[in-house]
Length: 472
Ligand code: P71
Image (tube, rainbow, N blue to C red):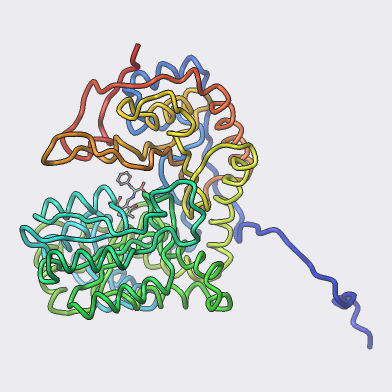
């Protein structure tokens, strides 16, 4: 009998767009404000988008951290979370998920990523130590310095160049790492902090070849490799796309291999892991894990819940499995970011390229060349975009970079960016269209945007709570 469907002409090749592998079950209304309202709101917030009230925001692209939409399976898990103080079933479910997906056997649950960084830094870093890393992250560097260490940037130079199209701008420069080892000695380097899909570089991946080479070099010298695995799923996607031998491997397989080249990981579960709160430190060495648990009970909570409730751990365990269950999940996630990025590129807006995994990064220096660096171009651009359209982005430039501890001068980063970060499973393509139109409008009127100065500057992690006023 002839097949009634499914016989296609020889040589025909079907191409299909990606679409989200889910449909929407619950919605949350959002409200557009008037321009007058937004001018008042940003002044009230001291021109800092962190200080806006979310009800005054239309499309919230401040961060992809803790802003994901959970699945029905995760919500169902919330209901059956085990709230026992000790030895909860949900804890063991989480241990199983981390072991299956990441491959680490020792789990130290924390309330979010920075708590894991705190504990790791305290157990491994001594006064005067050096901690190399592929570009700083704000909280990571804070905890390294707080523990008496000095962060040393060993990312490849291309990462600092917004125009470079290098496919793996998150790579570690092995020569820089070797030079550091020669200069200070391996015994002064407790570990290297390797971030997957480097946030501050624009969501840029590290290649598998580079991860492997870094691991081998470090192990020759007795230096541990600690992965910041916060956005490893995005990184796995880019490896699948850009590193030929991985084209036919699943995201789950690539994830595991990334982790194989490390001795442990800190994770903010508020990103890849699809939950609104949570995190963990994961290790291979039971001795180190013992030391970490001793601090965990002092700073977070008992070792079988850390900083999380039973329902948080249950939703997290399910989120970890979901993020690698199908490759379609990350394909749609990165695809949406790319969609926004491509719209801006087509309109000639200068952004960091290649488009990153978790957001689109506007090159504020290029958009506002008339604003001197110490008048905070990215801060001003984020504020202007909010006023224009109610879209909230985040400054990732000189304000985030803080001051040099010794000289007291600003650190002047090469990248002066506004990050438009896309929450997972939250916004539609239409929201991306509106965002692109808003950015293009601000860029076309960029001459109208002026610089800012501090009216309040916190001593550390200043970007969170700093306040500004317009100059002139
Ligand atoms: C992001 C965040 C949240 C954030 C943190 C600090 C300033 C502004 C926004 C958090 C990360 C991260 C990486 C690579 C560790 C943390 C801390 N990112 N590593 O991008 O991206 O995790 O927030 O759960 O404590 O908006 P935590």
